[in-house]
Length: 159
Image (cartoon, rainbow, N blue to C red; front, side, top):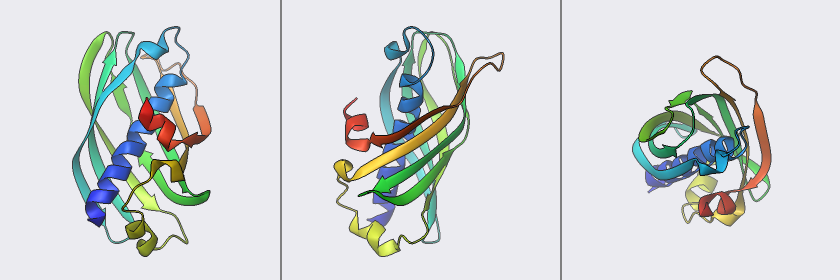
């Protein structure tokens, strides 16, 4: 049960981090880029404090191709630091609808016990917020770091 919970939370929050980048970018019709699906391909726990996850994220991108690097997020539960998430860079092809593999690691924050993680198995998105930063860039390397703080996970999951 704990493994399934971690997989679900990591999947939803990494997808939320990607969505924040897409919505916070600099292109004119950035809102036309859509996340069409999120699926957990694999979760590998590392002890009681972290887990690696591989997600399959469907993205419909009617615009130019881009990369996203330096993807980081801090998840808060009821206002307290809960977990840190780091994802590997991804490259999204232009003018295409495709599924991309995103690899990331979630680490439980200092002071959060495994019992509180297990107690969160009844995942309530309204209890969570996330701070996200990522660096979107064009193929020529031009880009900037985008940061969003205090994002409601419940609101992100509605989009």
